[in-house]
Length: 443
Image (cartoon, rainbow, N blue to C red; front, side, top):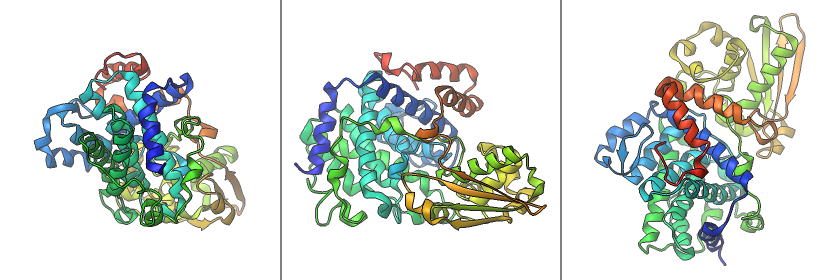
């Protein structure tokens, strides 16, 4: 069987599977986290602009946008998928260097709403989307990430798989949905090397493209079965010709959705270990930010390539700036949405501390990426002493996981200011009991 057929067979046959209770619970955690990211990013550009751009697809159709507006299924996937990535608080599967929730759950929810799926069927679609896409991302590896934005490329498979499951495609149709998704997959890292709105668009476009691929397959559209491993296929064209079999052996036995990273900071995940390490030193040594002379961050090279901006001027740039977010954490104690308000961007004390930051590649930590995301942080105080700490992982990674209570707190923090406490409590109750719902209620 081709790789596409193996994935297609897994996805179609999962309808008869009975997922372990632990897997279901982890999936609900992913949906809770996604919803928090969705609402937080709903008012952040380019999401509001997309509502204007695609107005002909709104106020009709079987799906809904974040705050309840009616939409066609592809428009809902596109706009919600964009919103869920816009505030930079969505989940991560670190081994694939990938944010699976934003495109996968956006597509799953849009189709589930249109198809009147149960809560459990929606959750199973999310599982299928995560399992197929995280494996695609893992095998494409670090070579893919050099030029491509995995959430745009790999995310297309998560969306296609989730949609294919909910459209009840058979094995052959499911396979062709993935084959079409492979040739739709796109998203260049150059798109966010400068200030732009492109990065969240990658997630939304992946969600829309995945749904489209599944819709086409339902009607008989076919794709090239060897699109993954062929001589001009995904592995060769977008990576280093990897061995796909390495991620297939435990498909359906090990579930990657149980090993997600949920963000504790509202910025790029590559900045988390430096933030966490700096805060550990500050608390341990009781160092006031005014007493800091120099901050040295040594970490893996992709972190510096993606988030090494020394002088960001916009909120979008600041989310990808280790100097900005580490300095913010040391001065204000956290890096949440308020960190990127205009007054923070123009804060003179913050700008001064940013000038004290030096970034270096740490060869040993670089060699361990993407499996480990670590940073060696050193704060030099004005009395000439160096205080160092090796942050071995990130708070929110599976080995330092956020609890259910942490996720609930994150949900409330991001949702209540927009929806109000009463509505937030109602939605929260639905999200944590999705597997019990015979009809997928408004979320």
